[in-house]
Amino acid sequence: MTSTLPSPDSPLRIGTRGSPLALAQAVETRRRLMTAFDLAEDAFTIVVIKTTGDDAGLIAKDRPLKELGGKGLFTKEIEQDLLSGAIDIAVHSMKDMPVDQPAGLLLDTYLPREDTRDAFVSPNVKSLADLPQGAVVGTSSLRRRAQLLNYRPDLKVVEFRGNVQTRLKKLGDGVADCTFLAMAGLNRLDMAHVAASAIDSTEMLPAVAQGAIGIERRADDGATAALLEAIHDTPTGQRLAAERAFLAALDGSCETPIAGLCELEGTTLHLRGEVLRPDGSERLTDARSAPIEDGAEMGRAMAAHLLTQAGPDFFAWRT
Image 1 (tube, rainbow, N blue to C red):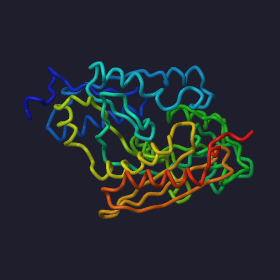
Image 2 (cartoon, rainbow, N blue to C red; image 1 turned 90 degrees about the horizontal axis):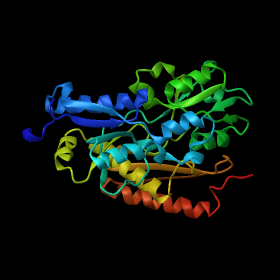
Image 3 (cartoon, rainbow, N blue to C red; image 1 turned 90 degrees about the vertical axis):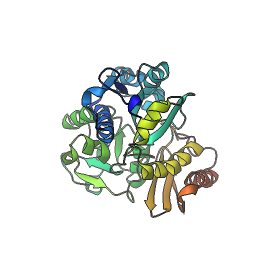
Image 4 (cartoon, rainbow, N blue to C red; image 1 turned 30 degrees about the vertical axis):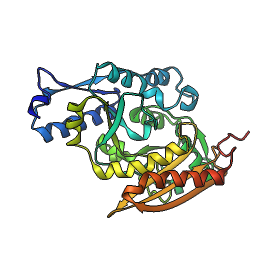
């Protein structure tokens, strides 16, 4: 094993986007590998990769992500560099990952999952329930938009895209009365104080895989696979197997409001899922439990049940 360890002469190249949160996640991955193998920091190189989504965000700041190409906008160039050998691993926020990987790549390593809840962020009020009638909410998430309008049809929702710092600046500029971020991201940036409150998952079910970091590698790279095995968190992988099977069976993308959360209790997985009409006018929910080994099948069965209830036009925008 020692012959395959990275070194200053042959560092492991860690690919990531350049946002502060993406860099924090890459640094966390590096730290865990350093600890697992007693390696120095110079045995690793963090490679920042600009994606189509980063450019699109600058050019079309007020257009929904679904109009720009969806989640793949933020992974395409990183995965191309991984396939070409320009980097050795790629670090991703799992809630932003498409359910399918390109041929030749595997996404099978997960770090311990952080807080899965959404953060309510507002300079004036402490919670969602405290928002005044007709308040303006900023979010780029179709899931959050649909959940908010289902809960409070009086709210006005405006497009609010960008990294954590960009969204906080927009809030400070008065573009909206509040916004929502993931508690996991705030925790990783040491910015938990920014949240006015954390929203319990019974009030706002999070995005599938929210709070989890995934590490992608080449399928034929056995040496890297052995390295990553040392930092893989099995319980997180078991939970995400159910959640991502649920998402995949629903054909989940940035164009469909879907939420899901799987929790582990002993050897049993408990999965909750929901789908919503994009305008928030209807919400369908389900909850199931299964042994760990049946998690993926449980996710697919839940998706099939909700699709039967929803019918063919459920996700269409109402005019």
